[in-house]
Image 1: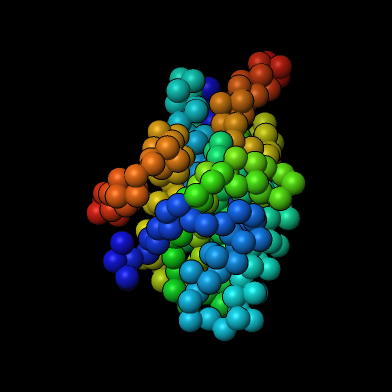
Image 2: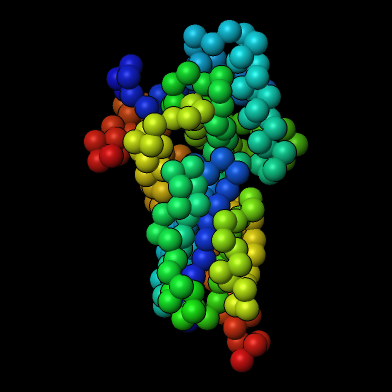
Length: 149
Length: 105
């Protein structure tokens, strides 16, 4: 993906727990944020999860927040090297799609993100993302989708 | 069966739109007419008209937050669930709507 892309892909990512995953997402999604702000983002993700585990399909999580600590909105697709156990509530997580939305984001960016989230209602598309084993193929699927935005 | 509904989640960027798409797909697959309004971070989209609401046999509210203009549905048969239910089990939710309608007839 381009550096200015909304999408960021982390394939075969070396994370093993929910805590490690949230720490990774916070750092990757907000690389210029201070450590305290990244911690705030982790807390917001955990807070959001109190309303329910963000499982949207078998093996797929969609944690998402809107935060004043997010400098640039992004969609982070994280494919763990090994299926994750997610706290006490879920196991065999193979794809984490995190949306970090900047507070007061422009409507055009929100529209793009909404179009992507709508696409996640397509079980076949989600299944393709989950089962793609090759990193280049994964990038291509997202690139193809992005071109249609 | 004519279904109208609203989807609205906490952040308004994810479950709102997945719930809308999933419910529309499930209802159409089951042979029903459906129109889903979304109240998300980009505001209200596909806003239901008074006529659509009046003609609806049942209302499905898939929400995690307080809805705007909920009183529009006063007097209608309403099924209210969290967006999570619409995302994970849209077919069951449409089936439930069919059952509720059948019971009331």
